[in-house]
Amino acid sequence: MSQASVSALDEAHCWHPFTQHAHLGAPERERLVLVEGEGPLLRDSEGREYIDGNSSIWTNLHGHRHPRIDTAIRAQLECVAHTSFLGFTNPPAAQLAAELVALWPAGTLTRVFFSDDGSTAIEVALKMAAQFWQLTGQKQRQKFVAFDQAYHGDTLGAASLGGVAAFHAHDGGWRAPATHLKSIAELEALDPREIAAVVLEPLIQGAAGMRLWPRGMLAALRAWCDAHGVLLIADEVMTGFGRTGTMFACEQENVVPDLVALAKGLTGGYLPLAATLATERIFSAFLGGPERTLYYGHSYTGNQLGCAAALANLAIFRDERVLEQLAGKIVQLSELLAPLRAHPAVSEVRQLGFIAGIELRADTGGDVCFAARRHGLLTRPIRDTVVLMPPYCIADAQLARAVAALAAAINEVCAST
Image 1: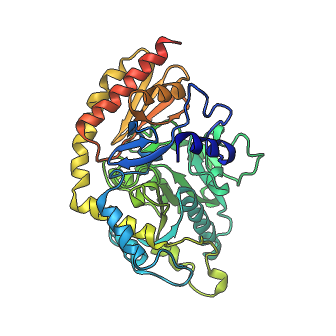
Image 2: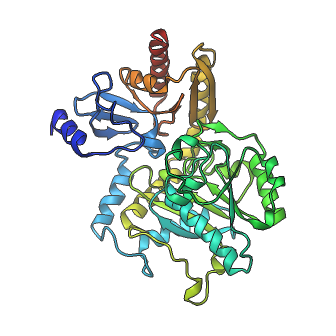
Image 3: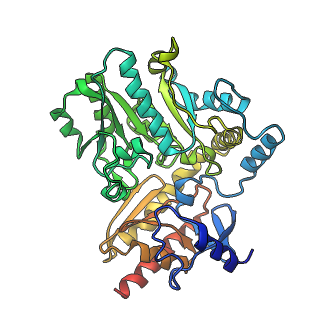
């Protein structure tokens, strides 16, 4: 199909997420039709090539068309694409659950509940926590605590935890009750006997504009939860699978949560799949009669294709020494970003691992990202913060090109404003 025909169909029928359609496809903001990818690169229908600067919304780890993941999915197709996980099982799901558990200290997180995406991974964690306290005789623990500027997804429960006003200002008040704090110190004003769980994006808040938590905050929160018998839910949807430089962000402060939500990079950015890991203590509370069942699930829970891709993803980490290779690229990214820290149009540059947020002094993030297209870089802003989070396979020269594209785009936009 031609670019024009795809664009026409899209304009007539598609509704894009987080997109203002009144401006989509305007002459100065061409509607890109992406048709091909290889490694850290994407190509559009006109043959133009771009660096995938935000890993296709923070999901792609090892690049597009990685032969190992491609092969794993094709091999699974020779068997079966999907069967029910409601009381049945399948080899890739069972194996993946075991491998995910093995990534955490022995005897800590022992159970895996599969779902579809980050929002649902958080949603099931909330349901598990709420029902756990009911089943263990502490029904007064009904409150959830989250933090200002947090983002945990867009389903009702997950969105209720969100602290970014732009994401829920127009929801008509349809939110589950949650308390939002600006700092861990504010926990002292709450009655911990009423709290079911505290939910946190460990080390860094993504949709807040890649804002870093103070070092030690996560460990202090774990200590507070332990002291008061409160469950800790870690949202590692963005930070999981190497983004912060370790497999999971929690590792950097030696913290093991009671529940952890995983998604995005779980399949290497190939297919929708999420996992919520829980302790044996939580799982055991649900054993017994029908009234103790966790009544929650999805049609595609434990999907074989997704699990096959995830297993290949984890094998790549092991066999290609991904975290070792990534360490040098994290240093290189920091060095490349250094000149931008002094740029008059840049308010702050924030980096954690292979995640960078370039905050602009003016609300020109969208304009900068569109300008960056002309220099061969695709990414999206979070309001006035431009995100750079490429696939791990990006070559040194490509990473330098990506930062140079951002610098050129900032110069162009800021010179005209």
